[in-house]
Image (cartoon, rainbow, N blue to C red; front, top):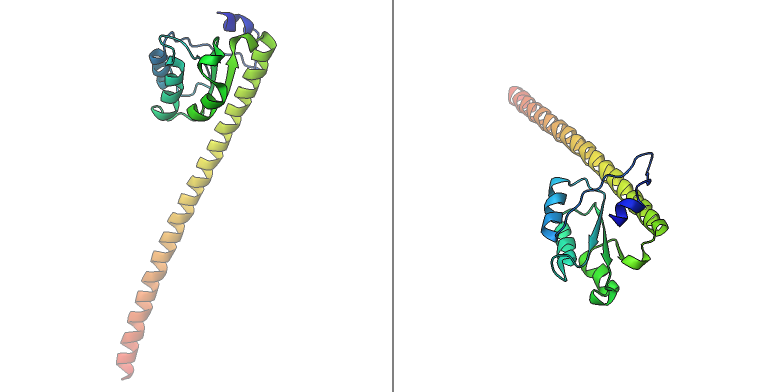
Length: 167
C-alpha cells in the first residue's frame, strides 16, 4: 500500500503504472508466469518464509526463464540476506533496504528499471529482426546454390553428350 501511495502519480513515457499484488512467493511466480511482460518486480525478501523472496527471484530466472523483468529485492532486515552475495547469486537487478525507499528514491528506482526494461525489449526485437533477415538470406543462398548445382549438372551432362558425339 505504501508503494502504491508513493507511486500513485508516477508516469513513464506518458503512461502510469499498473500494480499486480502477490502475497507469497509462489503466488508471485504464478502471477509473473501469467504476465510475462511485467517490467519490474519489487520482491520482499521475507514473505511466507525467511527466504521466500530469494526463492522467488531464483524461480523467475531459472523456472520461468524470464531475464527481461527487472527484479528488485526489498528487505527490512539487511543482515539476513547480505547484499553482495544476493546480487551475484540470484541475478537480481537491485537490492534495497525498505528504509532507503523514500518516495524520490522509489521514483528513481522505477525510472532506472523501466528504462532498462524498455532498452532490453528493444534490443531483443532488433536481434529477432536480424535473425529473421539472416534466415531469409540463408534460404536465398540455399536456393541459389541448389539452382547452380542443377545448372552445373545439366552443363556436365551436355558436355558429356557433346564429347560422345565428337568421339
